[in-house]
Length: 207
Image (spheres, one colour):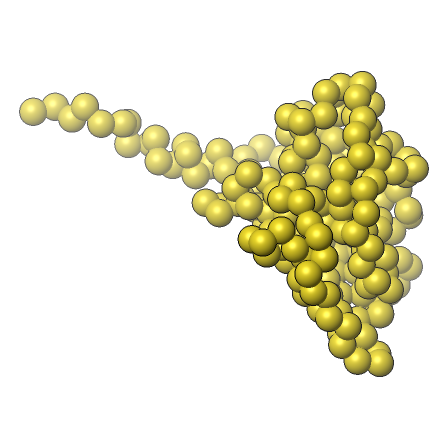
């Protein structure tokens, strides 16, 4: 009997269609950034290293769940190390390890769709755009709860204004506009984007 199942390449095509990219460029704050995003069954894993001059400004691992919501982060800056994650009871937890000890983060009120926003981070803004693309219409803005993280690692949970300027342009608080391409990947000064899969065509450089 002839098979009625999918063509032999169907599974390969599903794998190759996964959202898996890496890139580099210069952020709005002048720091150089190398980043990646890889999508799996549980969501997306975003990674980033930012350099200011010859020094590392931050190194970040950010995880979002299958719905695009913030799930976990691990951050290092010259000030120390930060781990942060939301709990199911609607609170934010984690800890910062700094030069004078450990600062515990316990029971901060949190929304399920709250954002993690490290100052100057490209991937935090990309993850936020992926989460809000179907929520904020072009030309609209809204106040959205975020964990705002400065390099000193003092986490401040507060609403920030997010504006969708046009189909690909966004503004976070009073920052300069942040632009993405049709895939939701960053358009950075001097930027390049590469697929993590070998059989994809390389993307054009940004100027």
